[in-house]
Length: 363
Ligand SMILES: Nc1ncnc2c1ncn2[C@@H]1O[C@H](COP(=O)(O)OP(=O)(O)O)[C@@H](O)[C@H]1O
Ligand SMILES: [Mg+2]
Image (cartoon, rainbow, N blue to C red; front, top):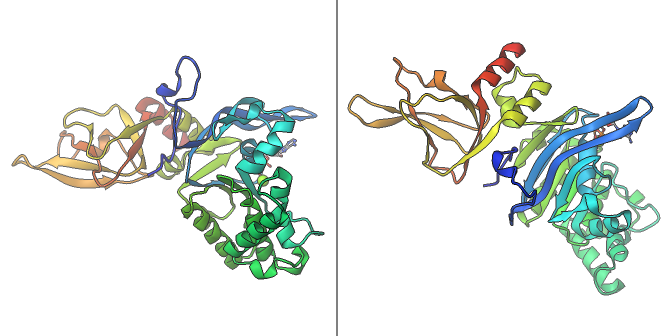
């Protein structure tokens, strides 16, 4: 369905640097690096990030503490700016917006959810939900704003606590209020930084289901989480390590590679898309590359002595194939086709020499 990973491909390196028109592309980070100034010199919390998120995706970002997750999120929300590179969200180059422009832009384009809820304690819950509408002057008047806020609280199953203060409800309930607040200006994107990090697992599950519901309603969600079980249920997982993105399929395929090598492999990999049923490698043609499936599946077909082709294996995301796997009872090489049962089939192609060098040094 969605492009799970769009690595940098040759096609991206067009001459004029303009973005190809793409109705589904919502978040586009190009060569983003972020350095923090420290007493010992600049520290790069993000290193050359290239990341594209389509409308309707539910993206989970995982990675150790200090790997750059919050810094990445702050690039997308415009809370912070890249040192190098471009951040284009919904067609707007937000790295070019002034301080004065970015806050109103964020107010209507991005809903924010934090680990510690960040509700204003002196306001009632419904007033907290109305705040972004007041701030951005959206919706006609106070009455309309309150009606909308109550409706949103109802959507997240917390309407009965609307006129209480945040301190009078539980953490899970406060997070529901915060999610209602994030929706108040109906932004296309919800960005959540460890939204379940301060909740017990049952409550975390309920909050996660709320996000799933929002995705079903058409929102795009970018969520940092520590919870690998939750991360498994989203449409796409991004792994950060020392400020670099590691591809989940490469990690699954090559568990012995360390994170630095995985990041390197991702940069070197060439993303190739195939139509359902399309031939990837023809019989007798030796593959020069090592391929990792990142979307859909591929089928390996062998020719029977009577000439009929039979399917002998299906290779799924996170698995790889190369020439060696395709030899069977002799030197005959099978045909590899894009599985006709999927809409979109994508492979990460790695040069075998490079790949061999990397895996050898990881052994
Ligand atoms: N304002 C800052 N100044 C200097 N270093 C920072 C600053 N903010 C974050 N860092 C450093 O950048 C790295 C990434 O931080 P962060 O994005 O908060 O990671 P995460 O959210 O994954 O825990 C960490 O090593 C952190 O110490
Ligand atoms: Mg963080």
